[in-house]
Length: 144
Length: 223
Picture 1 (cartoon, rainbow over the protein chains, first blue to last red):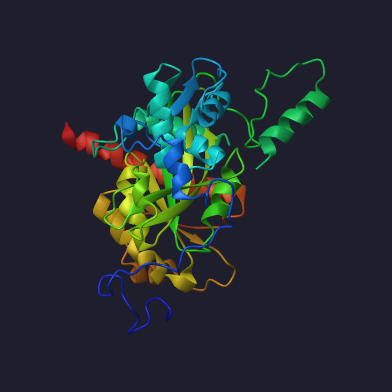
Picture 2: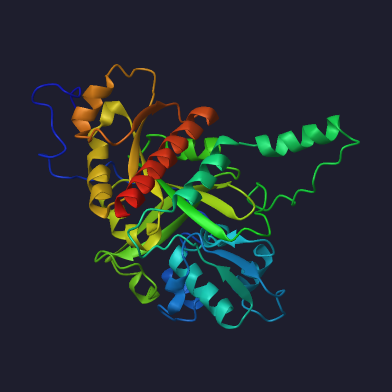
């Protein structure tokens, strides 16, 4: 595009919104390019449960150790949750999409094998976060 | 990036007598584990076109090596939980990077580098509801790449700041860039070097200070 401010330069308001460049193609990695059939098996064929309760940054903690015979993905989750870990980190570690990970986590929550610490910033409300919380964040960032 | 780890190591070497507080062992992500007391996850999203430096910025401040994950959705914008649909052509996948910063013993901030393209926005509500705010990272040579992201953030009512990633040949004035982005005066704009930790940190501080000002003003006017 031409330089900003140049007469005749395209303008955000008058130009139809258009997507950026095509997405960067990531190298294949385990789990990512598995067939849908395998992912279907992972979740036992179930579709959405109350897995929506899990935010990307809900912190998950294991309440028990893996047991023999447990589904391997469930066991893997329990092993990585000995310290709190966010849903999105679990998904990345498992190499599974976030939606599938949420279903697996709902299984474990239902059976009391994990506990979930949900974000306190209410996602439903359009309200801005409390100034006090933002001050905490600022202190943390300045100490980096 | 690895400064937390190397600081601890140096500290141990220099101050044998003064035993540092025990640190949790690194986890598989190569960074420190979260505190056992961590219970509040926060989100900030870095939005920008391909190649603008989102992952670089995340890496500069993250305590873990940036990780990558994905979400799958249908064309209708519904994230997929029913895998029978994945094989159909009606689905597409959006990948995103993330890193994290432990703010204190209870609060942890996750930074998401997200593509600004159209299909990504179908997933915004599902992935990024409750986000504190966003950084629009722009390359002034390709400002048009940012228009759509700014439009969508305004539509979602998500507060944001604009960070110009300095690629070394940026001769535009702030006023020119503001005009090209049609950026309101109250939206902060900063120039940064996404590779530089201090600079990247400053971008995040600018955003959170902006959020703080908005939040304080909103509460005052509500009283």
